Length: 408
Image 1 (cartoon, helix red, strand yellow):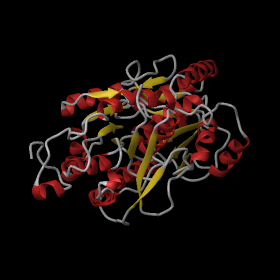
Image 2 (cartoon, helix red, strand yellow; image 1 turned 180 degrees about the vertical axis):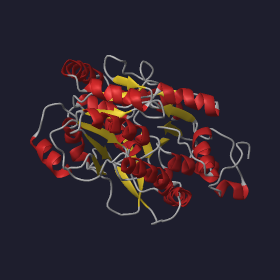
Image 3 (cartoon, rainbow, N blue to C red; image 1 turned 45 degrees about the vertical axis):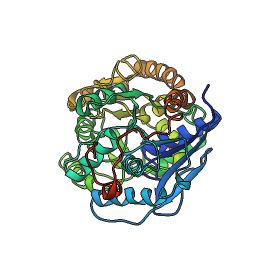
Image 4 (tube, rainbow, N blue to C red; image 1 turned 90 degrees about the horizontal axis):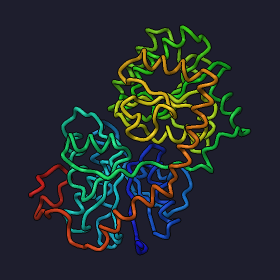
């Protein structure tokens, strides 16, 4: 039995994104288990988190920043360091980073002897060309005292690329929120987004390399030749500078394919969605397309399944991270033709009923309560020890947020 713990959970933003959704849901489930889990995030807007939470939250004071992705990440690391600059602010049993920004801040706090170490959940490893971003990403992984992953594919990637072992803790889904039964707001959202009567294919995450949007667009262009009324709905995304080049390539491909963007058009960019709209978004979609290039499937797949919406995932995930062929459709993420074939299959009435029923069973088995329970033995192994979990730097190196050697 784990004694009551004070847990600081740190994520990258108060806005809706995978790691923040995960952090809030985990914090709520840990509080329901009798622990005090406090979710932190930098908040340059001062508006607070994107939804009300059933756990304590802290909006960390953050400076506005423009420019490169490296400038943003460096500023947010500094924001976290300013917040946790005193022993009183560090009065937690466990520190848990959900992103590379908070992982770097906690690595520095460990070097300063303000905390004994930290746990890190790696949601994905991003392909980055900028050297500083790559160094920060590596540091937030290799300096962690314990690594967690949301998929077995992700754990295998960490072992192969960094030589680091990670525990698989998975995702969860709130079955009381994400339900298959239609609600009155579903039709309103459909009209607001400009959706027609034809089949709607949903992609969540914006125009992003990790989401494989270019190949999804290519597959959708092929589907439009067979199903002229089909629409592609792209939800989410952000305005980070490192996404601009990929977004431009997506828009150029849409133009070459003759696929217009806008309400009532073949392609609709919904942008960031409110949390209240997400269940309706899944229900009004005919199929979720999520053949991620990271191999593993994300939180959106479980949410879609809970809402009774068939999902297409990467063939690299099938049978490895959970859903197998009976619950989802799979496709080679690099093969637009294979994705288009899976999209056609997802519209067949008999197959849709099969995916709907099997997907709901998968979602019911993945609750946030069980996800939180998987964290507790890991937290317990950390809590008794107050000794630093890694060599401690001295002098000016201890105050540096850049990468420094592990034996510094």
